[in-house]
Image (cartoon, rainbow, N blue to C red):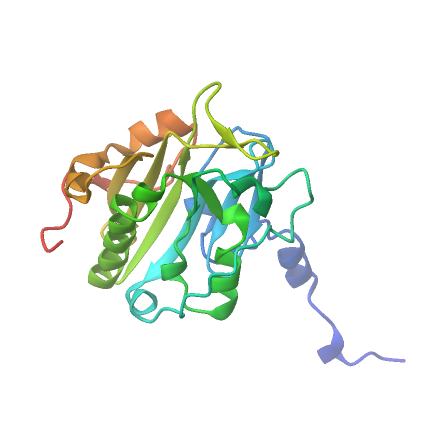
Length: 247
C-alpha cells in the first residue's frame, strides 16, 4: 500500500522541530544573555522569557521584545498574583513569602507592557517578581518602565532586559523560602535597528525620579554585577550615556 506523500513529514522538518532549543519567540537565541550559572532555567512565556534561578527562587534576567504598536495597545491590568504553576514547591516563591515582608511584589517584566490576556496573567506569576522597596517600585522604577515604553514607541522596536542585582554573599531575604531582596535592579533597552542601548542600575531604595538620568551606566557594569553577558553577539553596539532628549 502506498502512503500518500502529503501525509509524510520531511525528516529535516522533524529534526528542526526536535532540536529547536529556543522555544521562546520573544528573544531570539543570539540575543539571550550568556552565563555559566548552572541553576538557571529558561521559562518561556507568551510575551517574555525568564532566566530563572532555582537556587534563589528568583529570575536573574527577563527579556522581552516590545514594539511601538504593542507599547501603545496594552491589556487592561489584571492584578492576580499567584505562585508559578510551572514550578514545584521548594523551587519557587509562594504568596506567603511576601506577607508582612514590607516589600512590594515588584514586576520584573512590567504588567504594563502586556498586550494579551495570557501575557498579563503570566506577568503576575511570582517567578516574574522581585522583592522591592514600595517607594522605589512605585516611584523611580515606574518612571524607568515608562521610559522603556516610550523608547519602543519612538524607535519602533526594542529589546528590554531586566533583573535584580543580589548581594554577593549574605543579604536580606523574605519568607520561609528565603527569597533574596535585591540591593539594586538593572534594565537594558536595546534599539534593534540602530544598535543603540541604554543601561541603568537603580538601587533598591527610595530615590527621587529626577535622579534617573544619573543612573545610566555602562553595559559592562551590569555584566560585572550579575555575571551575565548581554548582547555579546551584537557588533558595533552604540552605548548611550544620556536619555533621549524628548523624555
